[in-house]
Image (cartoon, rainbow, N blue to C red; front, side):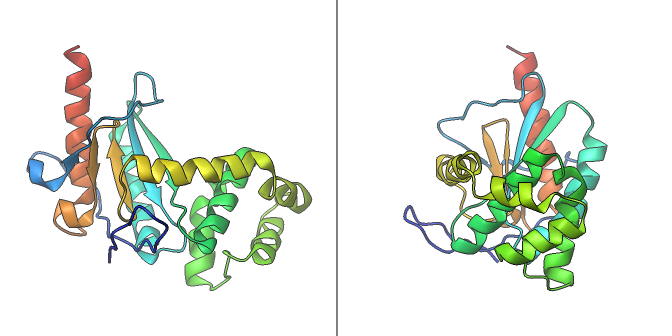
Length: 212
C-alpha cells in the first residue's frame, strides 16, 4: 500500500520493496528525477537514503532484502536510514532509532526491533515497552530514556520531518539515490523490482561523478 503525503501532516502508508537483482533491464520510468537535486553527505561514495517506518509491515519485509543488497553493492555506496515522522507512533519509533544510533546499538538492534514489534507483538511504539525492551537487550535503560527525551534527539526527529518534505517522499519505504533519483515499489513496477531499480541510478550517479 502507499498513501500520498500532503504538504500538511497526514497519514503515510507503506509501499513494497523487492529483493536485490541486476540493474540492466531498468527503464527510466521506474524512478523519477528530483528537481532540484539535493546535496549529499557521503563524500566519494554514492549516497542511498532509505526512508522507512518501523510500524510499516512492508518496511519490515524489505529489511532482509536491503541488507542483502547492501552486502552485494560493495563499499562504494553508503546507505543512510531516515525514519519517516508523520504521526505520534512514527515519532516514537524515530526517537528510538536515533537514540539507539547515538548509543551505538542500531547495527545490532535495527532488525530485532522490527521482529519484536511485528512478529512478537511487543508494541515498541510505546515508550515504556521500548525502554523495557532495550534493557532486555543489554542497553542502559536509564541513559536510553534520558537520551530519548533529550533536545539532541528532538532535533534529529525534527530534521527527519523536514527531510521527508524536502525530498518529496510520498510513501515508505522510499529510496533516494545521490540526491537526484527517487524510487518506490509502484514506480519500480512491483515488489520484485525495487532494489534492481535502486541499482540503476546508483550506476548512473557513479558515471555522472566520473564524468565531472
